[in-house]
Image (cartoon, rainbow, N blue to C red; front, side, top):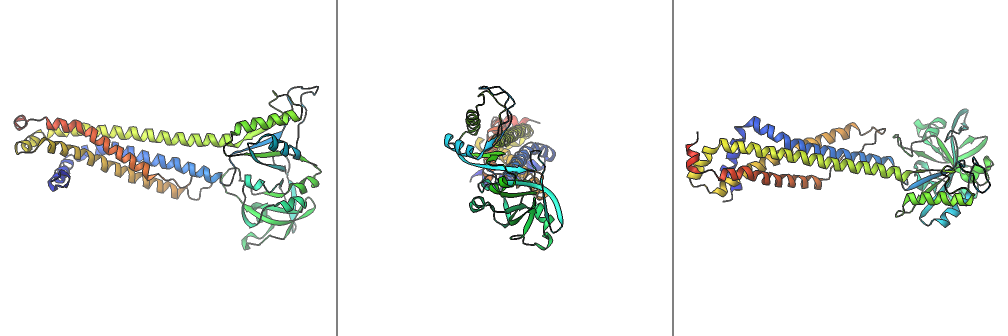
Length: 423
């Protein structure tokens, strides 16, 4: 009968571990701690990854924000310090010259980038909020979670309509949010002009690209007429195609605008950009590094624990020399003695790993519950890939077998006569 299915085999393992409780416990700590670290840190890294994904959900991370500044180098007879500007026709130029661009969204704004906001009022209540002129495509770059109505559409742009999509902060100030008042079709006064509310959006409380719920969006065509901006644009949000190199698109966009405006190719100040894709890539790299570090630390800790098990079993074999000699004298085969020791090694390793795994899962559950409603902290749903855990468990058992061969071979080499003579 296979040694694994023999009752006396398991009885021997039980009594062996029972007789050395403290030693067994201290040995198991190493492997258990390694698995605990592996599970908890891997889950925590996944929780941070999920948190950042949630934070940037609905936002085109492969995007660049481009705006005009002052020149810093004289060029073609123009002095330095010349004020640059962006215009709506520049959109067509960039899309025509740079095929890697997927789409461009122009925006003008009052109340951001250090500009004062605009006064808005309704039913005697007055406040200053950010006012932004946008295109419908702007919602593809920074998707608004609408709780009432809709976002701007092409008809709003072409018709220069006086319509607005307001943030939840504005809605709560001007409407009865406690009674869930429907604002659609009702109006608010912006800069002395009445605008019909066509939508209300809500944003996450966490800090991120979509964290401003005190902005009113109106058609860009209406915005430019209100402020006599003509075709001037404050900034472009440029989204590249998925397979494009965002850094190259960024450089090409600047170069095209420099060429059009007679700016020196070496001038790095004429047009400013913020590459969101580069920042997001750094965060992704950081999270990947965390996961890799977790795997390395957990694996090394597990290996150290398994080696400790081997050392303990070596001591155990020495203490059980007489017992092993009696078993050999009674006819036990060398393979049976070897398998007995190997089985003890696997049992200690497996039980230690399972205990560490359970404590790791419990810790992740506690962290998940405690951060469930903490929107200000980018952490969400810390989980582990059970495939990775079971793979680690398999490697751990394999290491237990390999390391266990050392004390097992020591036990096999014990001669029955010498063992019986030992004290």
